[in-house]
Each structure stands twice: as C-alpha cells, then as structure tokens.
Image (cartoon, rainbow, N blue to C red; front, top):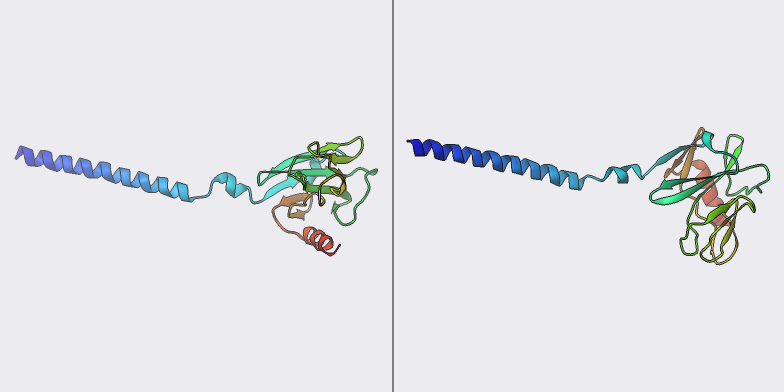
Length: 169
C-alpha cells in the first residue's frame, strides 16, 4: 500500500512540474511573437518644436535614422516648397543621410549648409543639394504638425503638399 501512495505522489509531482514547464513555454512563445517595445515606439515620434533654438541643429532618432531639425534664423534663405511652417517659424526637417551613399552630413552654421565629409556633397539650409555627387535633396520624413508638436511617421497636410510639389517639379 505504501508503494501505491508513493507512486501516486511521484505521478502528481511529475504532472505539476510538466504543467509549470508547459505554461512557462507558452509564455516564452507569446513573448517572442509580440513586437519589441522599441519596434512599437519606432512608428511615431513626437517632438515639441517650442524648445528648438534658431540656427542650432537638433538631431532626433526616428526608425534608426537621424532626423535633422533646424529652426531658421532671419538670414537663412527661404525655400517655399521644402520649409515647414509652424506658427511664425520656419523649419527644415530632413533625414540626416546623404542621398549619395548614406553618410551623415554635418551642419556648418558659418556657411549655413550641410556638408557630407565622405564625398564633398553640399546641401543648403533646406536640404537641397548644391554641390557634389548627391543626386537629389535630403529626404523629408513623413510628418504631421499638431500645434507646436511635430509627429514623425504620420503624413500630415504640409507633408502631402511638399511631396506633391516635389513630384511636379
């Protein structure tokens, strides 16, 4: 009789351990199916443009790429097609990757242009290529302006207008 009770206990213990293992495996499988928090947050990035200083380049990371945000000063030339207007301020919002080979250009406030050190590409303050091998202006990420907030990854009216203007020209 003692052996039967011991066998029953061992069977219940084995079933308990197997059950816990099965639940742990299911939880682990579900975690691998869920997208990572970094992937979920990479879709939209909100930036408050009130804190931007005129003439100073701000760089934010969006979907693993640098995005340049430059609040224009009075002496920067205006680009009616590419400039983003928020209230009474003008901004340049571009993906900070050279359109030639994907290098990251630097902002030179002295000459008011972006310069790519790899192959000498130069872009004006609105991201339009001026010199060198880049085949087109710096890309503009999809954006939407909500008050003084800029939402990257969302296609707003200003973005659609810029996109339509650049496709026509």
